[in-house]
Length: 263
Length: 217
Image 1 (tube, chains in turn brown, blue):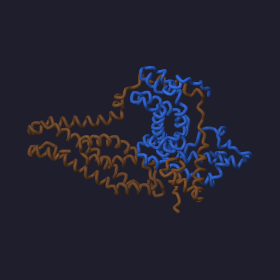
Image 2: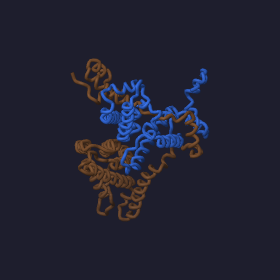
Image 3: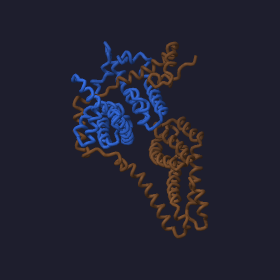
Image 4: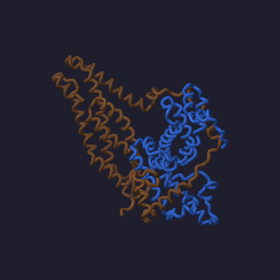
């Protein structure tokens, strides 16, 4: 008879076990697993004794008094969220890239063929190539940094990855935006790479701040097994190539170039 | 708490009252938002305290949660539950606050242990016919170890544990707060309990001690 794992027993106790009936049946028949469950329950029962102070009957009124003067006249409408600082920072960065791409196109317009000037898609493409290329470059550096993370000293048993977590959170925001754009553009390869990267970033962002070398090794293995770093590098290099080809050059054939740049 | 006997008509009003208060707030009636604050602040405080483990931070989380809820009320979908929504906002802000607090306390050598006194502490007021000094000392030590063990959890683990074990939130709700998949959220709950167990098992004993302390559920 296979005994229940600790994970299964904890999941059972916390009411999140997938095979609840199977575990219950096993527990009814297995003294050893019942004893193990009791030990888990004892720890949780002890934790349940930790008090939560009673804030008092008029706590609601107290909170209202504290916040009433800080409330704006009316709640914000949904579109006002677009003007939140964090979103503004991302949008600002994107806007800067768009302006830069536009100006580049404008100043170099004389050197380009009439076909290329008319090609709005190409400008749009260039904007995306620059922005996503920059994002993948940052992601690559992040993955390399994480792969090389070490404890500060050999005596330390845990590795602090809190700065990597913050970095992962920042990259996540951008990644979502580019993944959605890639999907809209029908660039499935890019969307799939960004999707994999996003899952990994999420994992890191939600990991404990301090992890054991074994856990770090697991992360490294995950990077390796899924080939995330490799994929990010390949797509990044490809974008760099695209960037070169989308840069206006008099000798280049614009229609051919446009074909190659198709996302 | 004194409760009015609801009439049939009032029952509907009570059931819809959050939705009505949200609508009135959106129409510019600030008093309607006061009703929501007064109705939900206790629950939000309980969650915030369990996550931050200290009263000033919990108080800040409660205030900030309601301020953010007010600011984002335009995005709130009327069919959703306001209590659950503000709860989620509080959990998110509590994670931010814990991160901030960790940075502030980075230089401190000793982890911060509960600031409340022990006079109203259930651990010290156990149902024990003969509370010997040894038992009292053990309980105080256990309490200290529990605070340390909770403080040692990562923000995600503490959030997952508090929301699941103490607040009974659904895994999907926890996943939303942690911005992760349901599987990852479930795994975070497991990791948290496993770590707590590892840290506290030596102090709790073989499953009988907690019962002796009158904590059997």
